[in-house]
Image (cartoon, rainbow, N blue to C red):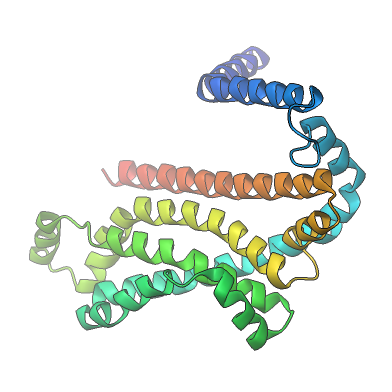
Length: 270
């Protein structure tokens, strides 16, 4: 009986998964087949766009170098930069929400920080930090903290005035309102910012490695591009894309888990 229920549950999960992603997977497979066919027919030179099978072969050929040296280095830059972005983003958003003067003083500077091209700033970070991890982390931080600040700040401003007044009449302090009302309401916006930010982190790490790195997937793709090894360059690009997807999926899973826990607590309280 228990095994039968498990099989039914797995079957339902598979059907749900295919319902969500089946069309995407079919379209992806179709595009890969067309891509492979166009390259094999010689309509596009393979040194410009290699065939998917050639990319997969190159990925397997360089698997040890990519997976044990370059991917961990890029992942470290992303994790450190993302962590700093979360800390700084939450602190700035909370400070601007709590203090109107702070919001007036800092918000425009935060916006201005995103108008400066990263390619122009990367040499400056290399000058400051050298060819170390921190020059790449600085690029990651600069590109990643903005979505977190803006989304968290906007989320904190979404508090219902009627609920706020109700809590005030019940004797709640400003901290109680912030903790019990504004933070829960800001979580959807906060996680939306995280999902955007974590993808930007991969982009920032790649830019930093491309312009001034000695390790990492961005550095590897630049070196392969200089050697006209397009297959290996695209193999690194595929890994970067998979890394961004994996991190996005992780944040989305955490968002669903926090949402379920929140609903469970509300159900118990009700």
